[in-house]
Image (cartoon, rainbow, N blue to C red; front, side):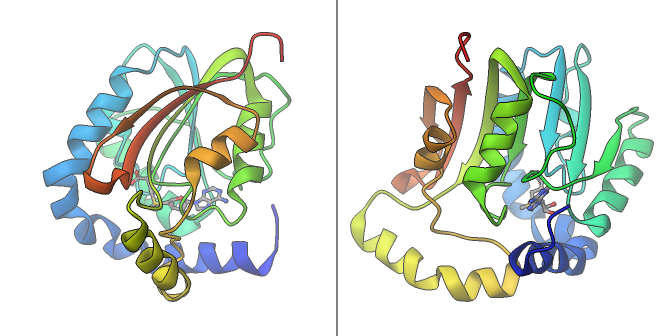
Length: 212
Ligand SMILES: C[S@@+](CC[C@H](N)C(=O)[O-])C[C@H]1O[C@@H](n2cnc3c(N)ncnc32)[C@H](O)[C@@H]1O
């Protein structure tokens, strides 16, 4: 597991937020996230799926029954809550403390990799997306729900300006160019669905080329 200052900062912030995370996000979950999660998981085929940054396990109730899923997170605090949720839902999900930037699997291990609202906080997102690519089988897919830098320029400038303080406070970057990062990691974009005004929230589906 990497020990860079940025990664430590992210882990500390999420450990701190963990007890309040579900409460803080309750209203966005009800209004938007829950709907978007259902939409994303309907696309998942599997059978062998890796979920990066499971957090407190909010996706667990959306996991299709036919998939064989493994989850990781870098924050022990978030992962402890995910364990409790899995127990409550009576789901057997292997949950591992692991850094998305340094996945501990050999190449071509999974059919699909899924992450929801994770690459806004992975310190080196391109490295994390490259690792996701490495462990995905050729022809396999990456499915993301992410918030990123808005398209309208004025709003993008404001988000870039606020990015540093918000990151310091919460561990989250609000001005990431996630679509560019996915491409930079080698993925071929299959579809991008805008979910909110200004294209801030998007669902991205990408594929590792068969010939990779
Ligand atoms: C905003 S939360 C999203 C949690 C969950 N995916 C959800 O949809 O509610 C981001 C999660 O990513 C995790 N995370 C951040 N950087 C990570 C990394 N490098 N490796 C693994 N998990 C990471 C955090 O610990 C946190 O649980």
